[in-house]
Length: 404
Image: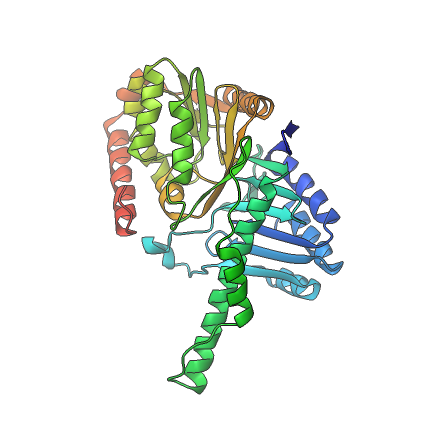
């Protein structure tokens, strides 16, 4: 579909995302820039790994960044294959298995972006992980994860490319600095580390680049420097402007109070507000912590649907008939305060209706509406578990240095 100068396509799950991505990779002629939290190497995920290999073998410059928690290592077979093909990859903040006991290491690269030849871009919440593969149980799931991405052609792709270039150059700079420090410590203990002039020049080249905020499709980032509240603010502004309907699907949900306030105020002024949250969960702590705030939302008239058919991994929202967002950011402290995230915000009735229809279908086929009365009278042990989980999450964020 067209949105002024943009062509956009909504993709649901790896079954739609992978074929579109692979087609773009197979058409690449100059360069591929790729960032993902998880790059798995089972089932259909291997098709993406092979497409990157094919692109590099025919001379395309392929730069891949994965997160050190989501993807702690690349299998040795693929390290060799990518090295032979000249696929360049980096691991963002690699950490050992014990490092996550320290909340200061929770600042992860969680965004999922790909730009091919500065022409075709992808942004969303889908990892390179087969929809039916459960990495925790190493098993096949009967139902696919619920998740979304957007394929985009148009001016917005340039902004995606610039941000990915910045990330690649910054990581290269850090690697160069560390190598210089290592050499200095071995050969000249008192020598000062040096940085490659070419990297310094590249950083200078991209330091001051900005890109316009396109009216109908634009990239919204979250980081710890210039864009600390950008995604949360995009949600709040859209919710405050809502006239009839708000639907939000978020895999993890523990937002700041100002976002909770926006949701409750919208419901009280007559907006139909529906939250689609996890019912079939992967991690008990964030699931229980989210339920701690159900009461205030239900009392205000917010509809809460727990999606129980399979894992909910979506991070999307629809407001009225014209506004939607698809991206990597959950509405929880890890995404809104710590991680690097990327969302596309689109103002267009066609793609908004497409996303709304898919969310309604998910609600109808796998959702259970939370009954306010039953929730209020749930068992004492459940309420206690919710409270403890909530305060443990708050404590972890406080320790990480972020007040929530």
